[in-house]
Image 1 (cartoon, rainbow, N blue to C red):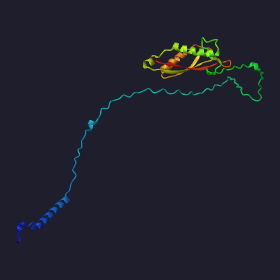
Image 2: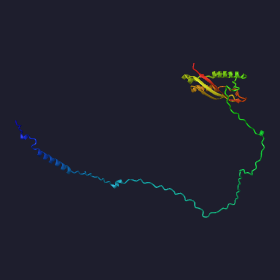
Image 3: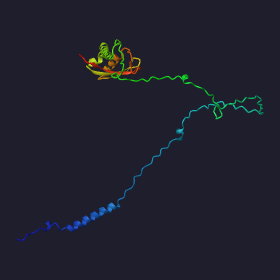
Image 4: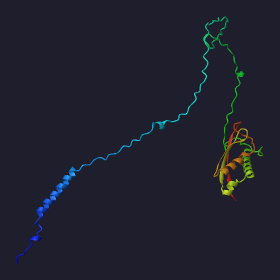
Length: 240
């Protein structure tokens, strides 16, 4: 059986015509695109005319201050008179104080007995444990060396207990501990160079106050001369 086609249903019948028409349209559009021209827009410049008379400003009038010119300098005298100096001036001769080889120096005979030599006492510190004669606490006079040491320590403890006051600040804060105090009994028997070290500044200050209240003592002696004696003592601060 042979297949029959309708000639009107053939799709390739007018394809050549359609191709030519499309090509013509594309060429026309391309030509118009190439021929298309653009022009810059014309901007109108607006010139504003300003009246020159309106620009005049009112300038305030100022008054010129005229000052009086300074007076001219004094004119030099026409004739200069020369005055002769007739007064005689005495010249002062300054003698040289330098010594030359020809200067004689008066000889002075000095005797050794005419020279006073002052011996400056040196402040020597001797430890309390090795000093020959320890400082004597008031009330310990006339005892032997061993008894004086025992009396000194006893009097020192009694003095601390008598003058002891617990600092209020440390008591409120519950601060307690041991304060080590160092001081020096000088050649005159006075208490000097007090230093303290402890757990709180208030306790250190109180320990220094107690030691500063010590009475003046008989100074310690080493080789028949007064010497300074360092001493240290611990003070316990304990709340009951």
